[in-house]
Length: 201
Image (cartoon, rainbow, N blue to C red; front, side, top):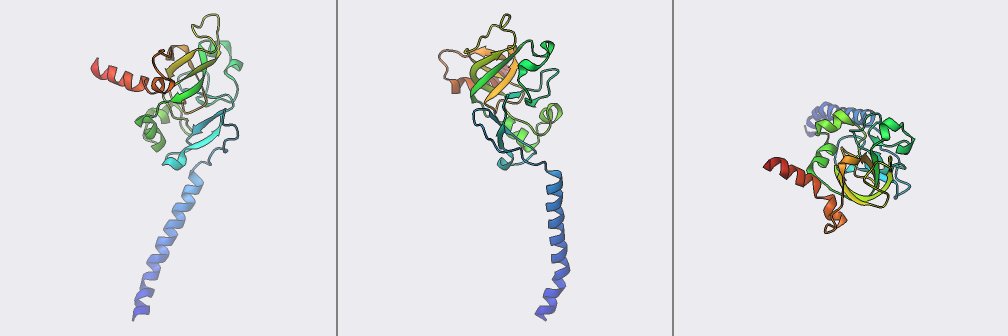
């Protein structure tokens, strides 16, 4: 009797297993491959190839850093070449910063989960999260017109991309780091400060 009863469950077990196999195959086919593992820690970033948990945070190379989503003429994400190699009209007001620290915000978690609409709209996958950072200026596109010079300590915001060792942003998104702020304090100040400002005014 027991054997017959167990045999009656076999079709359901087979169906469940075939469903699991189908899900596994679907995920393997539709999930983008992880980016190559980092080889140079001094020129790298966190890249998220597809939505998910902590397992989707991939540390990968970014030889020329990362650029945000609000620069016309340059595709957002990991830069394939140094910003100085782009046309003058595109790079005119850009500044590259060597990042000392970046802020971690709830919005970054939403990006990783695939829930942040503008991240999907303006960047897509893969994406390097991050909206705020502090660091040192290492390149200025137009050093005759820019108020910043190489070596200046700054803090700023990016439209994604600050989970990196270098980020390139328009000059107007940077400020000089206040002397009474540490680099870590400066990196975590702007997003919460701007949010509070909008809430109050």
